[in-house]
Image (cartoon, rainbow over all chains, first blue to last red; front, side, top):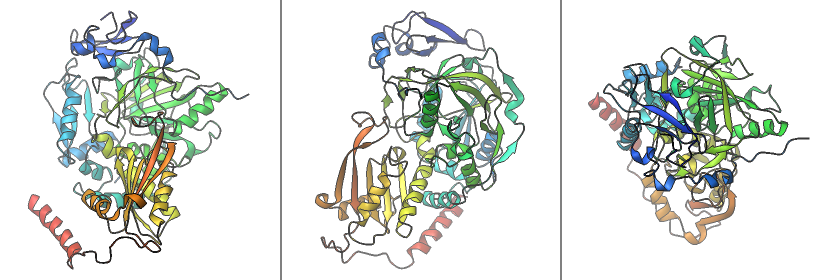
Length: 75
Length: 478
């Protein structure tokens, strides 16, 4: 759970645990903001088996289009 | 007939046999999405679902409501009509109530959601039973909440305060991503704030009664208040209460309320998210909301919406209320001609207009006008125009009109490079598309083509028999 299944980043943290202890934990990647629960199937949680069509290349993240664009400041 | 709050509406659904309680234990993924998708596959009369036994929580500790207005019976009940009201009647009743706009609001000092209030140690992942909707989604989303913001240049204008529904990705314990599509009102507010170098205050209300959700999903004009429209639809003033951190008004009956601000000049990777087009949006950089305050009722019910390949609850939620504004705006231009509008397909990317005509070429002008309505700027990629005696809600009739009245050489008009919402997967570049008007009306002088002088008519008395048969069927079923 320390490696992001989607972009491979090691910057991940646990953000929640089930109120009934030991059932599941929720994790988030601070690089691509992917979020997953420990009980989801391996094609969501395992970096080696994550859905290939939805893998994210960390190099593409800064190139993502801004929606909406940031406007110029009014003078 | 107004529903006090979300729970009041759930009680009505239960009384009417339109709420299914799932008592068996379910997993957050994939059970809740899978059950809701299955429900949508079963037809257009399906009930809402209420889950109260969720793995990882004690029973009743977390409750999730799905598909709350995801069928025509539930949509009819939202308007306080009998659950078996035919769709076309729901359309005309909605149009009638839309004409009662504006209904003044009723202001309150306190609300049930004030029961619990948090300003520190906010963790949305712990406060809400969040879950993934579709497998390729980039995270857990909130996609049926009312997001409220004000015009920054004219903050005193109540009508320019906007209540809209935007997808929100939970991106941290107290952070959300938001998708303000440029055609939507909140994008105007955000631009005004960012041009000043300021954050935009917002309030997010989850688990509202269904009339404000419907008004929030209606493409109103920029200066029309969703609260005053909700009052018109429910026939009673809509109840609102002030936020604490900003001059924003909140639906009184909400289960959970988040107060925060969209951070000026910040964009962060968001998505993908399975959208109402039946396709995932790609990953893009979108604005971020910082949450500063949370209120909720004791043991709140988390309302969520499954979105995916149409039809899902989304399509019921934005079917009639997309068709009626287009109808009213077309009637402003052609009050004696336009009969009805069906813009229920993928939020009106396809729209069908039934109209009388004054002379040859008239129907094409009606189609052109649809493209320039506020909603048409982002939708109405294909506009089909049919005669006044063709019911636009009856697709076999519409197909008949296209089959027999349309001449491709004369009646298929393509207008190049118009605006469309960027989520249209066919647009290229995203946000630009050709649009088409299909004139499937009968040629009228000075147009002389075709052989339409001997149309078949129905035997006398069909209308009365139709009502009689519906009554007989209802009696047989009850």
